Image (cartoon, rainbow, N blue to C red; front, side, top):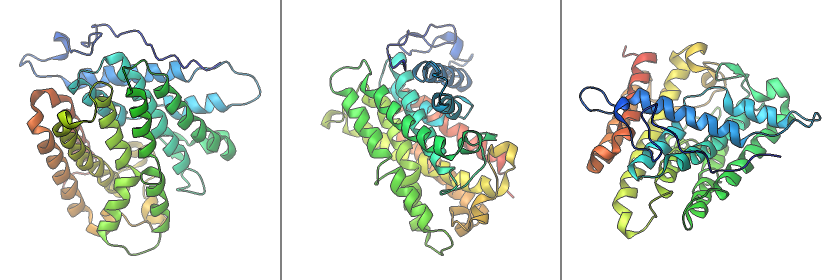
Length: 335
């Protein structure tokens, strides 16, 4: 049977994170500033552990479905969406152990979109995170079922969450909207429809906001939703978080467009040059590399400005901006 229990044991303070998510002394440098490498590594590890626990079933000897689901979720990745959830949760004082399972649900859903995007009928890619894609390793039929099952398990995880009030319902609604026809599914449909066409930049930006940006927005909101409801009292908080995620999510996709042109397989973890080979219009192909790079930097700056009014409590969200900046400078230096 699949273990869908969500009451994980509160994490101890050995890595600088206490049971309620407050950072200990080891997570701060001599200046007192939060060390991003500590909380990001610890948070990614905790989400990995939650995924391993939630996607655990005895092998019935007849199918490879659960093995393929674990392969799709447990073999690396930057865990950016889960970290966004954890960072927003810290801002709202959400208990760390609750965030672990919410972050795991988000990563299941993200993996679902990647598995389906890689299928021959979609982007037809053979590499993901430096490994053979799920349909290459397990077959196309199993890959389709993996995506379907991961989506279901993501919702089961949220529905089983030991959270106060209507929080589980709000979380399920938020994630469902992110992958609906108004979100990732609709964005993917638009992406496929634009292949080989000349389109305006605004159309590409709108598609990106749906295909990948909607899940980024949900990841940020879900971290806060565990503890803080969407109401008039918290309108300013969610306005800031939504502006942050709109800018940050689009910046991530623009960076991905740039790296598809400039980076190699080792850096990308997938096949480079796929967009050009498939005649897919992107921000990089429409704007040019240097203008697209500046666009990404401007978006990251705007994301930082969006959360500036939230003060030091938004430090982790700001550090994710810094990580994206560093990643862009490393893999796509200025010409």
